Length: 378
Image (cartoon, rainbow, N blue to C red; front, side, top):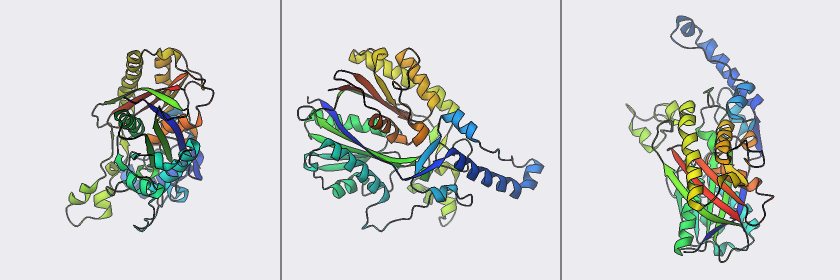
């Protein structure tokens, strides 16, 4: 059984960013217009007036201060509040593939080896641009990689599930190196007219090269991976191809895809109550199975959804209050980027390790799903 190594990572960050102040101004303008247009219904008690958002509310609830997006103007237009990302012709590289390719090229440059050594491409992300052909195959073709490719979706846990899948391919001898990409345009499925969630997501793409240990120059040895899923409706998105078949007549945009349940929906308090203990226990149990003292972990690269969740998990795993260097937080700048969050944290903050130091990449989210990947610096 060949051991696997995380040999390199890459990151693509959009060049547009939205601050909390900008986002709040757009939301509050829309909410004020809604209240004015429905003043009679609100006065009669038929409708509830919309409550303004605030920078203080967002930062206290999430720790998020800004987010990168593919289109800023569409999100901040109170008459639209949806990113404007035009469709491309079929013979052009699609948006998600382009993002993934840019992150992949960053990882390949850091890796320093020819793409001909990569035998598989996985696209592991929350929302694919289309059902088929697979995004992974499009990325594979754009990079000139042989072998095979496929898409996989386990929501925010997709990257750790992808690392596990890649490590298993390597362990079985199927391939010697795998490229995994995580392109996320989360702004496209976020309801920017929902005060409780309008601030949560950002856009980004990450890439990871997982390689057989016997040919890797350095990198991070994968000591163990563990996956867990428990069904829950507390995070859900009902968008899909069957939406158009559910209408009462000819499908229209509003009837088929315009409802709020066709966007990101979550019961935040329930998610916190369910997921935090589940993930904390999973990390501690997995560490024990591997003979690792969790209190001695040098660094945690957790899913970047909510600072309160990460701080709670960090305290439970390390047995004390973590330092900022031990429990990496990048969501203040990037917001929640779904599958890419823990990989961004790892990519940006893996400095200061000496051979033998151990860290943890961990993701968790809708499903529920969770994945742990313990790594040791070579």
